[in-house]
Length: 201
Image: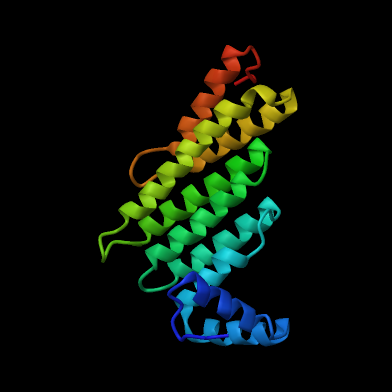
């Protein structure tokens, strides 16, 4: 087996894989943890790639909000990290078929990132537009999911989604004036009325 310091080819990768498989899980875990302690970017990459998929929505939202708060408490928030965290939460939304849970995850990202921008995230490097793009993506995903799933909702399910979006849209005061949650709420009402399943306002 010919191990090279840099992995430049498929053969290099396979050689390193074969070599690493000779070590125990514990030994490899220690090696990874040592690197995570020394390299924050590597640590963040590992977190985003290996943390559990399909977690309970409450757990995902709680972890997301806690991580965003840590960035808020910093003098300068890391925009790339916030984007990674947000994309992971959005991916969790894709792993569930429940419309309400999907919307809760998208809303948590929108509200969290808007709060970050209000706190000055991206101001110094003038890259806050990255966060607005993620918020817009969440808004578009909400509209898409509502369009796809509203017809499958029971009366109780429709009422739960209606109440959630109504409450969140009323609380949300977006910095850029674009209430993405309210837009989703209005689409839900429009579609529900069109299918004669509208909840009472």
